[in-house]
Amino acid sequence: MDKKKIALIGAAGRMGRAITQAFPQSKSVSLAYAIVRPDTYCLGFDSGLHSGGKENKVLFTAELEDAIKNSNGVIDFSSLQALDSNLDYCIKYNKPMVIGLTGLDKEHKRKIESASKTIPIVLSPNMSIGVNLLFKLTEIAAKVLDNNFDIEVLDIHHKHKKDSPSGTASKLKDILLSTLERKESDVVYGRHGIYNERPAKEIGIHTMRAGEVVGDHTVFFFSPEERIEISHKAQDRKTFGVGSVKAIEFVIGKEPGLYDMFDVLGI
Image (tube, rainbow, N blue to C red; front, side, top):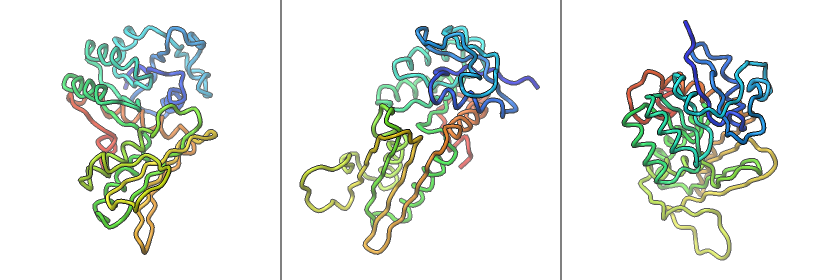
């Protein structure tokens, strides 16, 4: 069986390299187009070697439209600035997408939802299988513990990360708000100064950016008698690459719609 050809946008970045390394393990898809910006220093380099793996003879290219047109599916880990054009080309050529961008605002999400009426899209702030299990366990814990526990979320990443809190921490917050029927006004991002007693429904989100931490997330549930911690610590970006490849395998051939990693993993 011939493997489906995948276009990877943002192929030279940290996530792009991790995804490139994950493709050889797939039995159904392969990297065919490694897309970078026209001004990228590595244009024309072998993407396999650049990722730290073996030569794959897929050279970095800036020919975005041709790559999308000739692919069977698209993985987008580029930038928010490029999202509109990437969506437009995928709609134009009817290509399924996996979008792993973080820092999406309401307008970005609206455009993705609109595009998903035409093409199938998997959208997730974190493609790791373990992190998506963290999402599900957080949902279960919140349902069971209800309003009897104080909740805090800790997000730790490398010093180069641009968005804060991370997309994963924001997703955890959204899960907690939805499950517990709370509002954004119940969320506090870090603390400074003099505070009154902690409101019962408050959810604290805390960010650390230091060193080369791949990504650590912990949800804390505190009561006067006990503390529950649900944690995920990424030791290698390969975990995100494996999940991204699973996502594109899943979405090829699906009906138009907006899917997430729960759909991909069947949880």
